Length: 311
Image (cartoon, rainbow, N blue to C red; front, side, top):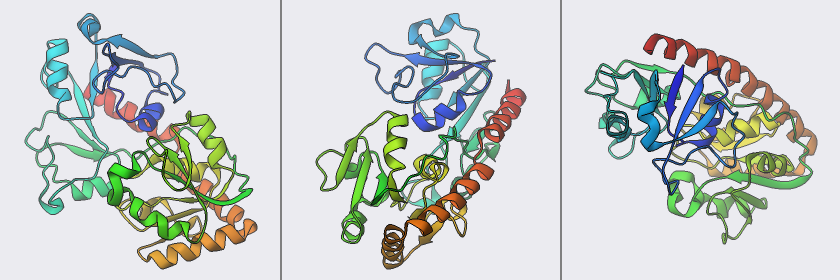
């Protein structure tokens, strides 16, 4: 199939484009949010190709994979076809609801013609999906391999824009964790923070550096499920995370420590930093759990089934 897909979420899209389809990625002249083209820091195969936005009408697109509400209008304007009516479409919801959460209706809640795909069961539980035919396709992740060395008794953290996202990403908790174990922060716009910082590294290099850290810290309070958490588990890293959103499902017993008590999380970081054998053994369990639940083959199979139904 020919699938229209905006480059919105780099890690998720990297897994999605590993399938056996032709993925058309819109490109605008300034590579802005509505047309970033192919990812530059993630390894994408050649069947994910950039198409200038004004040439999309020349493509025989079978299905559009939407990820933001305004892409409904973009697709209609650029293609001359209405998603859900003239063009088969699915909508992927990456995020947890914001605002008055118990009363948050999804933007597609009033439509029954476009399947709504939640990436976690937590999302499906908390969004009011209304009339939309909702289902869950859990994440799949390209396996980076067991690369853990844990040679540095430090905690690795991956957060994009930690200053802007503050309490959502748990950035305000980092000083309490850093008082116990040195932190290294990876992501976009991390430069200048009072930790070791690695600004927007290519994915493969980031994985290599992250795997040298003794433990992975996932400080998020409110997020669907950061794919960096699954990637760290696949690298073979033990995990310490607040027991929030889907993390309680992703990190089973033996793969790390999750808790709503910051003191418990601090103690876990200290324990892993002080005991490389415990850290390595826990990291092996984390990798096994991630492979079993978030394997790429299952993810692509689930999507092929839905795309076949929809197109």
